[in-house]
Image (cartoon, rainbow, N blue to C red):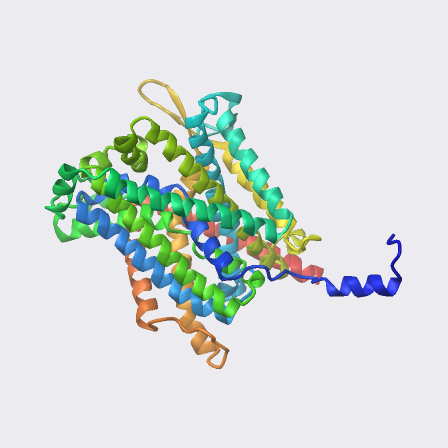
Length: 517
């Protein structure tokens, strides 16, 4: 009961409070969500695998240029959809409006099941892994609950490293239930810090770690192939008509090497679309969401390219290809600062993964909110708490992300019988890279569909370079998808299965909604 206030005053006060989302995000906030969600730990690691696939300095840099062009092209194209439909849910809404509720649901289903939650799990474990560099007790082999076998291929466990990852997910989830203002403050601070950290890594590599021998070896013969790994067809039955190739196998081999390399570089540059999930909370969404997409992706892609120039200024290509545990950034700082380089890199990656996890957690729940309002997800995820955020969506997302941290893959060495454990989320994320590309292609194709279906709809921003830029992205992404089908078959069809399982789930959910209505 309110003392000292009349019922009329109390009613007036409640009416003055916003009943839905609060428009808290300006252009800077929106841009930090784009940048912060993109920069995780990938840029510090995946260059080693790209260098092994492409086998040359020019190939390594070209792979990042291709990823950059595709990411910026997609962001410029998404700007039209974001300005046209500035609603919570973003890409889910675009697919629903361009095609049908089924396609929107399949995307949202995959986001919840793997894309968002699996990435949150991966980033949280990455944070814990590098905290273990500073505090060795945080080990993947220090068991709180030793692995419990669930089947021949799967187990569940709780190590100290997993426990720290769970604490991070729980901490950031609870913080984000306290309101958007706190969530964006964390995002702004940590995005600014890790952007400066990445700039520092670039400057350290180019100037402090400048190695004349490495520079001459790397840049005097940009396209000289060395130690390129062999890429096998993705299934045994394909080997009768598809050759095993390397980047040195001519134009076809080079094409395959670039296509396979995009798995790492595109994944490292992914999550730029998360700002579209929060469009309902942007102050001026028709202007700021498209601008933040363009500015944010431009900043990150430029930094990623320059980071690789920094690596190549301090390390030979062979050192990049053979960096311990693929930690290229750590190896770069190691040649500059010695043993303390690993500590510096661990701190930088912890800052980066903390901010990345916050951005992913903040944005993801808005997709489930939009799905719930269409009757296609749990009703509780469609309600906002007193601080105007979808708290139940945040909690459900955190719970499933935590389960993915706990679940393990179980591998038995047939020769020795030794058992090793991997991370289920890593396998799932490999599976859905293909599916994520498919949804990007469908969404950008939605620009053409909606221009035909709704020619008179208000479009404050029109896709830059239309129709050529959107078509270029669709063609390039489709080519990469074809390469992945042929040479990464084992990782593509399970991703499609995950998506297709959503079809009967959609039918059941929509049927339940129709009955209750």
